[in-house]
Image 1 (cartoon, rainbow, N blue to C red):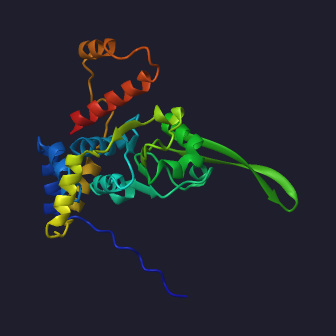
Image 2 (cartoon, one colour):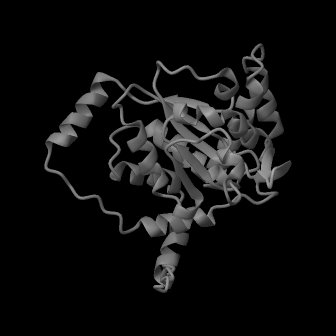
Image 3 (cartoon, rainbow, N blue to C red):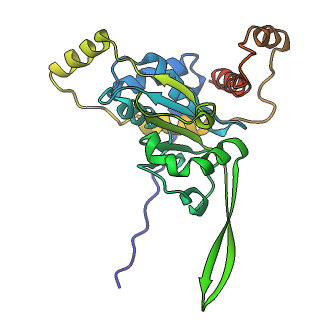
Length: 269
């Protein structure tokens, strides 16, 4: 049998590590991260660039947010998400075309501090019940029937971790209410001006995408972690904001948690 080759781990030089730390110390870090996403092939979409960058940064937070990108077919939803995820270490990104009903329970490894990118919302519908548990509770305990030597029994599997879930959908796909409250929904720009900007950019001479500095960005993102005691919430300001929320809608409870998480992610930057 052929011997399996061990994969070499790529290590950054001391200079590259210093560059990653320098990125983190830059007051314009978040702005530059969003600009870097644009250079990876995203035209416009400044709002969604910020949302996806902050969601990824918040993957280590106690209540990581999830994002649902909405837009018509061919509006560039997947291109937008894939570009944003390139700024994060590959080991923390789990990409799936779809999920079967119990796949999340039987999968290996913790999903804590991970970004779970499901290409299409409808491709993960079968697994939504378990996905909701991960998003809300951070844990799945699933018991299933086994059959061996003519005897029936049961086994239990467990999966832990609340990932940042990012997925896409089109307007005609119905999003279950139980799912809708667990996501920040954000529409892509499908305006005529955005269409013009995209086709004009494509009409120009193609430029190769420079990815040489991505390991530095990925290292910077890996160093940007939540630590207990990092944040102090301004109680007076938050109480004022809370009084002006649409309090007749119960989903405001989950939206409030997302607001606090995104605000903390901005502060961490």
